[in-house]
Length: 68
Image 1 (tube, rainbow, N blue to C red):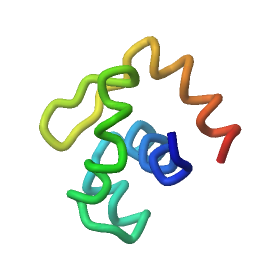
Image 2 (image 1 turned 90 degrees about the horizontal axis):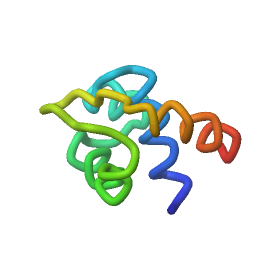
Image 3 (image 1 turned 120 degrees about the vertical axis):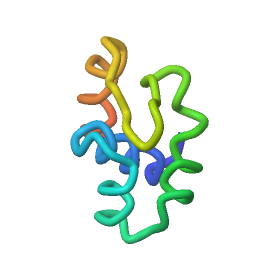
Image 4 (image 1 turned 45 degrees about the vertical axis):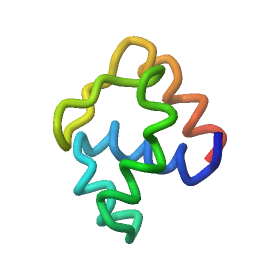
């Protein structure tokens, strides 16, 4: 787990969009997607460019934010 993955996860969950998160991170959308791909199965369900937080996400997010 890397800090840039946690940042991407935090922004995608808060903003609800990979595109919006990418703009804030100043990276391309494919870069944001790549950064959180490893986390995806355990932290959320992706539908297209949107991220729908699961109950696990809601529990994990405070720890990710604290690490940031």
